[in-house]
Length: 592
Image 1: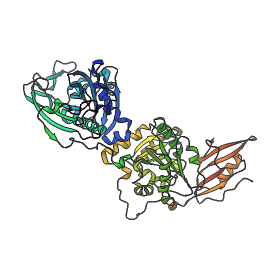
Image 2: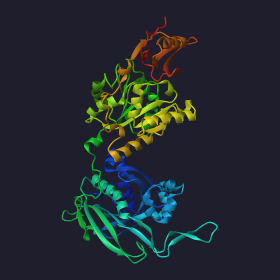
Image 3: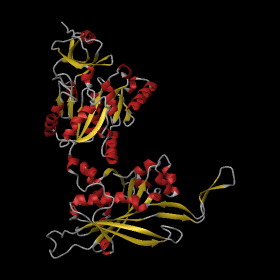
Image 4: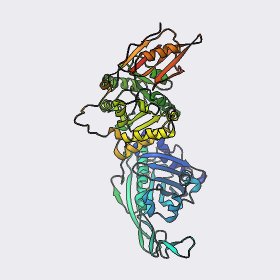
């Protein structure tokens, strides 16, 4: 292993500390490859360098935020030694805080606790009660090797000889928080830091494509740093070292890499990193794009939500591809979505039934044309996601399972009673209650409560014009992967014996009717067409040449929940037509 794999320049500690640069390459550098970082167990990192260089981050398998703060660096003729304070920051509601020092508990209760963590560099002295150990980075000055070591007490324990008491308000009496001779704090420090060290060591091994040589050693230590009663406590030290490859040809071939000081002391060799749950390199499946399913009843606002989501992803260079499915022969939603995003349209059918066999070739065409980290499948408004999930199971060689997101129309909630809509809500991982601004706060709460009764496992988010905090979707997907291997929608479910098939739109006799309109039409013409379609009409959409006061303007027509809207055309190349979707549709009267 050569250090230039990590830091593409020679070490020069004479000009300033190099340890922060090495730490930053290990912590932040791996995040340039997001798939690889996730496979290794990283779940986000935030550098803060206003004071001493510092980082806060999360790793898989732990609910805590970890922090590293650069402390000091020194060198000898062969090595550079950098020392960092290692912090563990539990959530304010986490029971493990009860074992922390009282100062830490008081800090965690403050409203500014989270903002202090985000600026660890500035607040490191105040957050010292959360420091549970030290991390040391040792690097060979000739660039031939690297070692990281974690040292922390097995139990960070303190006995309060005099006890700790508080005086009750207005009285002379005191209440003991810690009685004399009682335990003030007793933190399993090494165990809490182990997940952080494991992820960091696995990252080091991954970056250098080598397996680290590990050593675990236990050094007895006593004194007030661990206890104040003269008892012995164990300081555990865990080392991961890379340094077996000789230096480049510019150095004598007879020279051998230096022996790292961490390995000269006795220790128990380990075959693998303790507590490691993630691979040092991504599994083949981890390199596949994630397939999210976007569903929702007719007119709920799926395409508007999708466009907002794509804007968010593209703005963060998390490029996604889209498969859009429409019942009619004209792909209006695909025309409204195109831009930076590659869109594959599957029209004249539904992926939950008649077009299920078309999903694989459509997905293959899409991935060939536009490699992406995420694929979003927007279904028709009458698709049952349970049926779509059955088809997705056959695509495990192309994509990984993602979220099922259902859009609900708050405005049309009481006007729509459909078996398919109920199935969409029951299958969702995330339910977005759209058009929240169109109803009162009380009505919105009622709708969200009814949605929650139908699916208690789903996360429910209100939205206005399809907007939500889209970063929440990534966080939810990551959390479900860590806890249960995937979102709830992909967990096996038992169906009632009397209903062995998932309902779809054919059960409710939904159908579509497309009317080609090459000639200009007026608003009254469109209103007459909608009225003539009959009471079973749920949705109408399309692009027409609208004749308004003698001016012919290409216009998007949107009809849902009894409301007719006209929008600007994003792509003027689409064919002029209207698609009507509903049950028992009548023959639509076309303008003469």
